[in-house]
Length: 319
Image (cartoon, rainbow, N blue to C red; front, side, top):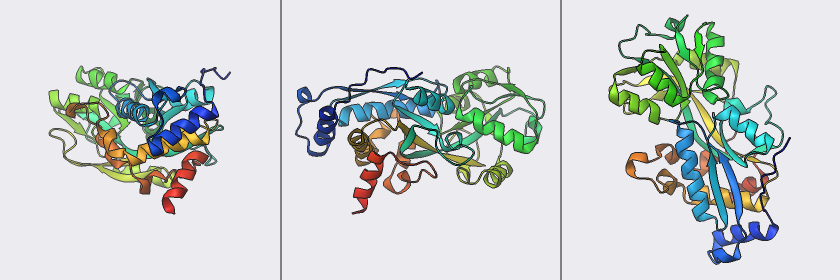
């Protein structure tokens, strides 16, 4: 059942919001409020951090728009909430979004591609786990239920024919459990660096397990959303560069949001992309993933169609 969100999207409100963004002439008192909900992710995840910055950025730049964030278990949970009408916008990894026939879930489209996540496989530095094959029979966190981490790590384990003692913990919970010896390793599909792993590495030596063979297997089995990648040596204290797999993240939207509003949101994301790195945060809470946001890659959402409002904005940029 679709939840009534109480969204007041009169055509006048949307046009004023879009017009005020472009020409800067609308007074706030003239704009009917447009209340939006953006699904983000769990504690310790980049989704939570970049989602908060996007919400603050859109609220500040689109007159009359007020965006609040909704914590979640990440990708699959965000897709579920979008389809149920519980939120209007949401973050997701591209592989969790694309169905087996290559289409998007019904009723959803993309505003843009934002940044790429990297699959981390983390163990403590003194662990006996040196390679992917060493995961056999070990206690491994696959991320929270309904997260992109769960989706991708299950694919990796299935392709590698490795059986593990699966645990389902958020990024912050996984890092704490790894530190306390309650699990042997953790998967995390996230931006680089990610807060939970950064904090863990600052307190205790860790290692990242290479996943280059697994990247090749994913690329072959599921063409489209995967690419070989490298987590750089500068990402985490004391951790050398490590080969892995990257997955793009997109900002999803319900198809029933008016074109004018989505166009205004798209414009403000790309016109002021540099300010999303801070968006009201201090340097310690900066969002480095936001530096990846640009027009050239933003339109690349694979088989997921752009919302008509976003598509119109990208078309205008080409003229």
